[in-house]
Amino acid sequence: MGMFDYITHEGRRYQTKDTPDQYLSEYRIVNGRLLGDEWHTESVPKAERPHPDAPDDSFLALVGCMRRVIDKADIDLNWHGYIDMVPDIGDDDDADYRAKFTDGNLVSFERLSQT
Image (tube, rainbow, N blue to C red; front, side):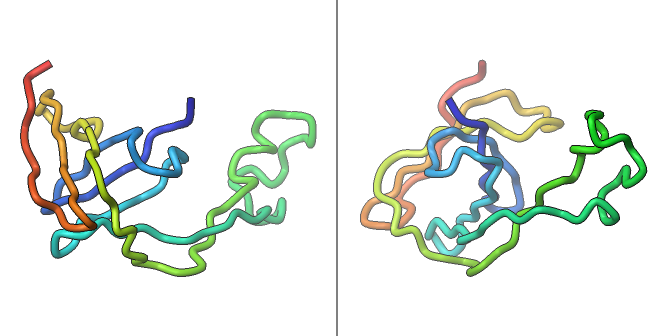
């Protein structure tokens, strides 16, 4: 199972595993549409990493070794279905939320329950 992704809606950030990437990607609900980005990863030269002098066989040498590069931003995903999510870490709200999209349009965004 992958990592979680983030969705921002009305200035609030949520975590979900219902989006396509599940790789710490960032999505946005804008004007009732789910938007995402096309991206690729590239290797970061050792001199640009947080610990450039770390020994090659150490964990610190790996920190910051890859970066995400956005190829195309704000792609309309034309999402159809549900996305379940929870508020991001640090948010005092512990409820579950569900967004429902029909033919790409957000038709409901509801608070489901307190966990």
